[in-house]
Image (cartoon, rainbow, N blue to C red; front, side):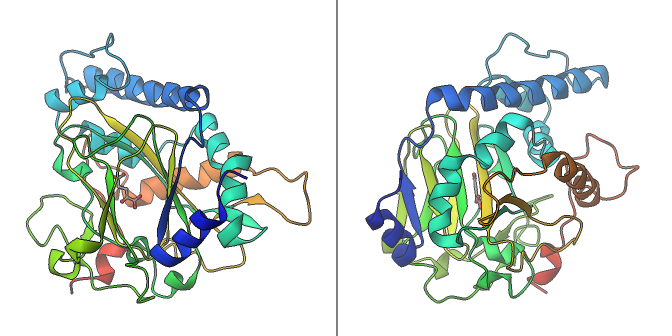
Length: 311
Ligand SMILES: O=C(O)CCC(=O)C(=O)O
């Protein structure tokens, strides 16, 4: 078991824990290869549509999107929203390593939650810097009662300079969803983010989570967290993947897609049915992006969580 009793305890008490070296470079590389493919496909499309003049094809996966973003603002948001789940990332998500860890909170039956993300956090990109929030605030009321740990996994070493995560130690303890506001209303153009006002974040409880690539930050669904600005030149690639027990409420507004069952306690040979789930994800994507006649380079999205707050 990769997680210790004291880390499990820390998660329960403080709302987070970091497990180091869960994934090796060899395990991360195939997923980075998929990010590369996603960026390449995007660059080809953007080039054909006349949005960019240089595809920056010779740049590596940590640089290329940063340059594309410089040439065409919104590139990274489009990639983030596309939410393209490919087989290697699916494999990592449903890996024994992650399932054996989250089993400690979720139980022996485990699903993956439809809210998951590839974060292509390009340097100094306002819409890729996530303000203080609790994950449950993005779901339907009541879902905060479901144990729903998130696994946040960086693909490069992360620190204060390149946009690592911060969590509010013990901030899940009130066991409720705090008041959230809409960034959009506060003047951040085209933002879909919710935020908790800084006055409600006690500075002395903020933990800055500097981590090595392949380590995993586990977050309780109610612990406030945010990511810092990326002041480096590289794209801070990470994923956040969520889990829960299949019998519990997912709280996913659209109702378009259920959590994907990854482990069944009564059937050790069971494997997740990714093919059908991928289809559901595509429908979900269309719905979030709004009307289907929308320009495919328009990076705005609609989200039902925006109707829950700040009325
Ligand atoms: O990766 C980030 O920048 C933010 C991630 C986050 O806030 C989340 O996973 O809920």
